[in-house]
Image (cartoon, rainbow, N blue to C red):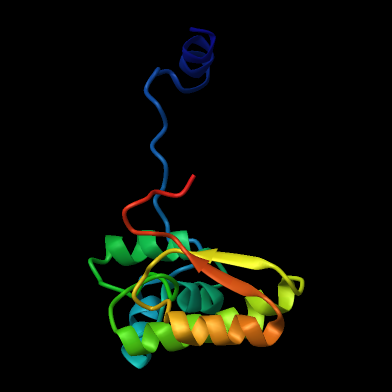
Amino acid sequence: MQRWEARLKETGTIEVKKRNSTWRKIEPTRLLKFLEKRPGAYLIEIAEEFGCSDVAVLKHVNDLKIQCKKTTQYKEIDDTTDSVLFEFWFENHLLKEVDKGTTIILDNATFHKKFVLAGLAKAHGCEVLYFNRLIPPI
């Protein structure tokens, strides 16, 4: 009530002031030009280009009714590409962060190539275990 009374005194009406909807960081023309040059860009790559979050990019891309790749992680589109990407991350990021003797538990996603990841983990002194599809993780 107090806000309404204050608004009535200030503006002469109790109606809420309409916000200006402006493009702050992502201009539509610049976004469209970027996507013409790099049609396969992921949201995170576009966000880095525009200096904002991938969520902001997704909102603007949806407003423009454009389809984009959302993420590079955990997407089972092309088995070879995603398994290569995951193996790279597993070897160059995850294994460098864990101690020797660590047990790494993974689900059964198609890009978790059991023999490759187990070999990489063993070379680092770790072990890989996989969830059984029929038994949910605890």
